[in-house]
Image 1 (cartoon, rainbow, N blue to C red):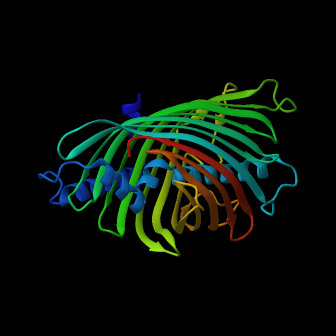
Image 2 (tube, rainbow, N blue to C red; image 1 turned 90 degrees about the vertical axis):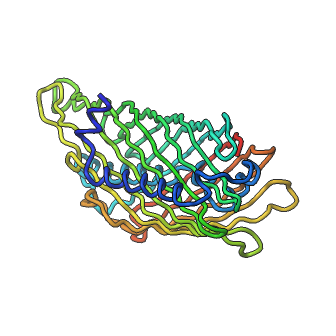
Image 3 (cartoon, rainbow, N blue to C red; image 1 turned 60 degrees about the horizontal axis):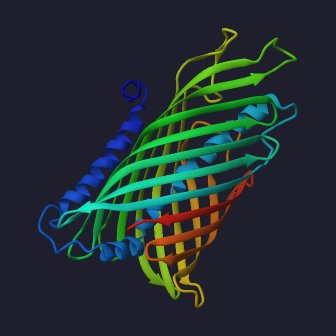
Length: 375
């Protein structure tokens, strides 16, 4: 079933992004003379420091583009559905949402040769997302994969990983008596490279085949609840360029990238033999350019603790879901503490604030991340 969806439901642009991401990563990995030739004995401690300083460890651990894309997608969907179903609703409504994210990320050494290290990569995540009076949703996700990494004698690590991903979703609109629930499974390809002392690049592409059920009770109109199966093929890709530097008495990282979401839905028919359409048809598309800066400082005299602030600006370049809500530019600020409480054991706590330039939508969020690994 999954193989069939790869061939039939994946949009051409999503395929191109996946191929470009994979080609880019393999080109970076293979172009360096250090890849495939004898280098100094593999130095995992050097690799760990280089990944942290370059920003690549943050790319491996955090899925900020994934969360931003899916939460925006939900906001657009709920804006149209509530405008259609709520009497008196209009595009003047402000959409203030909140999120709470807890995740565990682990990259464990499972063996290595003289110049290549292999890791088992695991991610477990739970997300709660709410738009007051409009939507309550939660997502559970588990990723399991293998990552290969090499470290040149110049200390420039390069990695490539492939994971199986699974996801479980529950969404409950508050303006009608309804639900959407389902599960998905797919594949994820990711890679990155430290190019020089200041520059690095990372990419991520994933495909998820999701199946579920949508139900809605309209007792005043229908004698029984309307229920229909849903089939959804989702593609998410992003590419980030990172520049690291010492600044303002600490470490800084500029990060710019493009993030893209493609959702394709199968034809739907409910239990009353009525055709069901999604709010934006059978294909949802969303892509934005993000640029931002992260600044980190040692936190007082606490060993291994760093305080940080991050600011980003997102600009939507493609969106076919903005008929009822148009706010193309969003700024965000993140404040957090990253504490390395033991070798290769980290705890990250972060507060997030997103605000649209048109002040139509905003989001407050909390993020708790535990890193337990050999990097």
